[in-house]
Image (tube, rainbow, N blue to C red; front, side, top):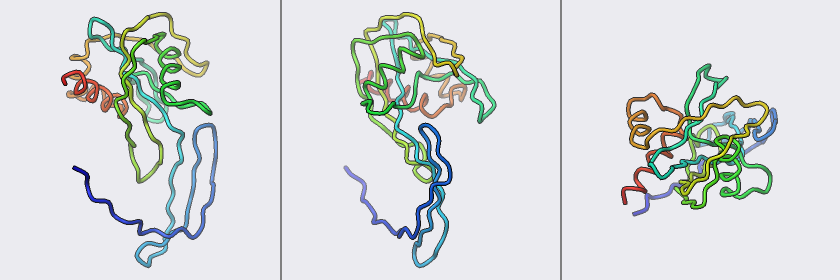
Length: 182
């Protein structure tokens, strides 16, 4: 079943780049909708990946790090932004090695999603990585990461209790669980 699609009610009058940095651009557009003129600000963010890496003991790897914007330490699946020209799978392989020190022989796409289409255009691609070879992580110089392995069932329980609440992590763990239960 497919849900019905509506038509675009917006007409763009102007498009202004406010600020730009690696991976992110901030825009303000003047638009009309139903005869009303208004500003519409949004963020254009490069695509990214999130990886549920699961070993033969049905454990998944999480990386812990301080998240400056929310002033919290978070445990999350390995994830990151695409470099220029990278496919989502190439991005996933690189990020998994950098953040967790893990290589995978088997990769299963778990689909993609957009976190908040009203404020940003970023597309997030999810993967299940299996048949792992575990080594040492090599985070980027601006990252301080800790690595933790825990059973997938425990990770999903932590999603349900709200201890794991990063959007990438929540969606990816639930999709991985659903895929594995098929």
